[in-house]
Length: 257
Image (cartoon, rainbow, N blue to C red):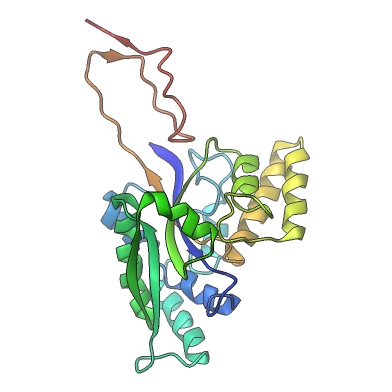
């Protein structure tokens, strides 16, 4: 089932070279999202923006809108050609490559996609070194901005724009690890939150999500799905589709013994 959780690329927007928006664009263009999904989830993952993708996700962008965003075009070779062009403008190329550390929490679900990310970055003249961080030190390191780029996972409690936007993209939010802040977009957060017409709100959410991806606020690599198994004698278990954190109270679960 979908987990309403995503693997995402975080960058230190306050320090060179990724304080430059064009450098962040090159990173976003390097991603082959389908490769992540095929390798890590045996094809059981989803490509999307900040919001959980449809059909289970209520607020996710339509596929046509998604494909128009930087790095979401299925033609990965074309995307990477553009990314290499950006890197070459900054003086990088086959003979001069950018060396970076790719930080990640030192558990498999963070580490495995980080390894794939490093491999993909090689295509745009970036040589990444894996920087595994113990869990107790991961969040303090991110808060200190003591990293260049990182592979992060973000889970949200419910499939609702208020939960996603305010937690992860609002100015000053503690969970906004990259420090992204766009006052104009924050006003749109409030506008969509107050909108009572469901269809109008959905279109506002799509526009916000589109701009977040165009700003490379936190490029979404892929959305996870998790499998759950249980004994046949366990009855009444219903898997949630809007968050990995929901549905664990088991008030309707019973054992047939």
